[in-house]
Length: 77
Image (cartoon, rainbow, N blue to C red; front, side):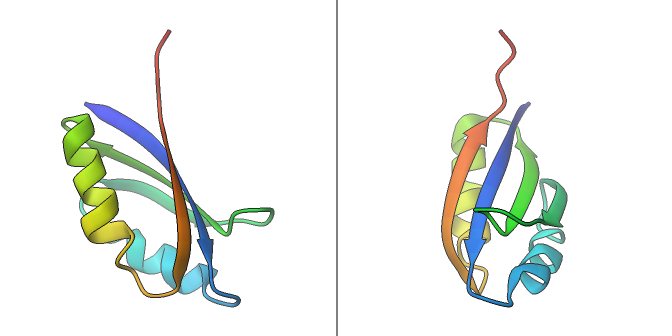
């Protein structure tokens, strides 16, 4: 199982809506609207890195109101 944080920038005033929509995507553990340089932070999981990438590109990035994402895989060193 691979987990990652997805940092999301949204259009002005869209953070709550984006977080709500993303929270319903399969594989999303949590989606919170926050303040700072990013508007939404998501914790997600998938079976493989490839599956995680497909989820981000095919599902998360397609949510209306998102302008940019940054995916940060969790590592255990």
